[in-house]
Length: 439
Image (tube, rainbow, N blue to C red; front, side, top):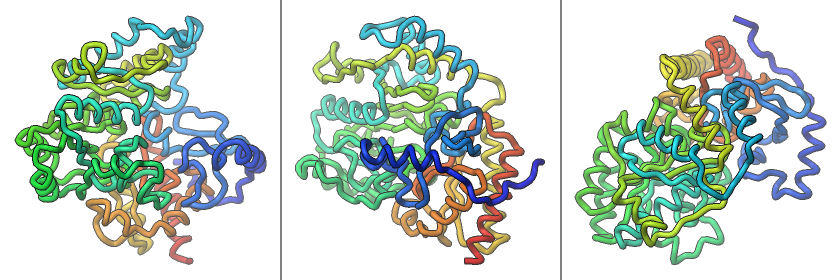
């Protein structure tokens, strides 16, 4: 095993200059809020390139990456087969505004892996996928209310910005200006892992709830696994109440195994949303379900949804090649084992250094919460010491380890990460915990 990454004064002069230029013409200098590092402090990263498990910033500094484009890069950065496929497709044209066989091929791969999806519609982002699924649910049931869970994030569509996780939790935004009150009132919130609260809302809003939307493994308040029986309970309640169950697998789809996380829980959604991994790093997402339900979508039905770049050929080629690579025998076992060793190593390092913390993990997802109590929902997640996380983030970054610049996000292990990388990360974390303990 190579030496433990040591803390050093990292020079990011060119990155700083680029960011200062960006602040003048980009909102906050970024195109997505968490990238600004406002909750963790320090200088935002300006990335020049990625390769395998590493990122390289504009000053040439090398970083071991556990953000992985927020989970999209399950194979690692610039995977040779995926980049070759993109380059070959680019020579044929980048966008046609017409259907290609590539769309049919990727759709077939997804529907074969997730049989509950009989028909699928490709879009360009996870927000589009969840927004469209909610519209379809309302159109099909002729009901107006959507029930979501506190701390779960389903993109930035108006219907989902109430008590959401991810960037809103990071920035402390409880209510988003610009969302009409009349629309906000159509979104109901329940605590994650609380079936009793769900039953109560269905009783209170009898025959008015179109759908329940849920992350099968919450990953936007940090990682919070579902309690035993929670997902099955939601499936039973929604069926009994005539509502649809939307399972948001934008993060978890094809991450836990070759298919959907809901399959491991033996639960079948009415509608499933996908993103990130199915595009191999290019902007693509999707929503799908039974043929009967999806036939409500135009041009077969009256629920309208469209997109100029939907089914973009570059994204389709990247997705097809990514899913081909994910069928390699033993790939998921290896990724999940390295993630398990990382989580166990972090727990041991916390214990050895006397730092109060919880490591929630499942499959290749993990979050370190700086709290002495278990994290089972958004309320308990928010008890985490975010200032301590910010200190930990900076300590790790100084040691060449890039974690999510937010307490309320996940760390992602990719196929490119090695056992040696895991050992380096645990050693760096132990050193960082010791630095925090010294004050």
